[in-house]
Image 1 (cartoon, rainbow, N blue to C red):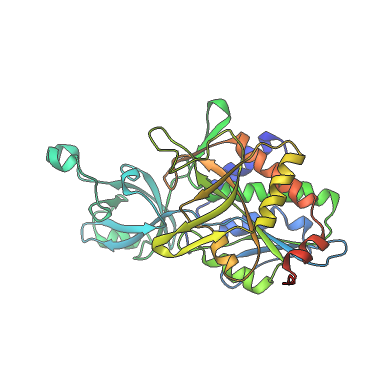
Image 2 (image 1 turned 135 degrees about the vertical axis):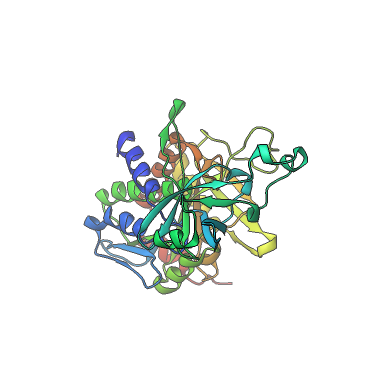
Length: 364
């Protein structure tokens, strides 16, 4: 897949609205791009997309996954004068929301809106110096009453996404909503299509799970159902930014994908110790193929947290990006393309016997 095709794939996937709880269009778009290779393709009852590629002589199976959902908002209150108060659907810093164009996913289709805060002209200087709580923000959709809001097909509990806003930038950078994790889905598609040309020695499950942003829920359901010998997740990670200490974020843009060692969020008692055997295989694949890479240990969680709870050895490939969990995230195509190369090289170098050994009991 050349760069132009890869960019178009990211753009198309990122444009699809897919907040937690409303990911089906994203899941179907992902599966459609691999269906011609599939022995089997379906959505499970939770909405996770599962595409199975049959191996030549499978002794075991591998699951690779990137989540479908994006961070967003959810309608919490509709006021008599037609304003929508909301809550967060995923981890968003409210400071990034001011004057952001959004779409409310109502019963009759998307409705355009804007996140609004009290006007600067009507605020006191001391108020403007403080962070604005989520409950002081609202969405304006052009309605003047709750009846007009309901006539637009909007109800309490409807999800809200950021407006599609993909743009190519200088230096090989791109910016859009939902890079986390539509770029992961694009990487899976590109890598799997490349590896499939050579044929696989094992069954491969390409999975696009739901609800990662609200607790890595879908991936655990799929892992429990499929029981693969091992899994590799593809996701994004916060890169260093000006003024941020390297102790908080060590990964950098344009230095290659991250092969993660460990992550953990103490408050949620959630995280992943990535299987060292898979970590080493990913590093070896990168070095054997001259692919630049980074390693990290981070304060976060991913779908790996749910998969490892099922006792499945898990590895992870991550793309560094800036503006995390905002209406417009930014990344270098150099890193995303290298991540696709790394995953393809890993898939091509793996055998069914390797996977069987990963999942077999080890003598004491």
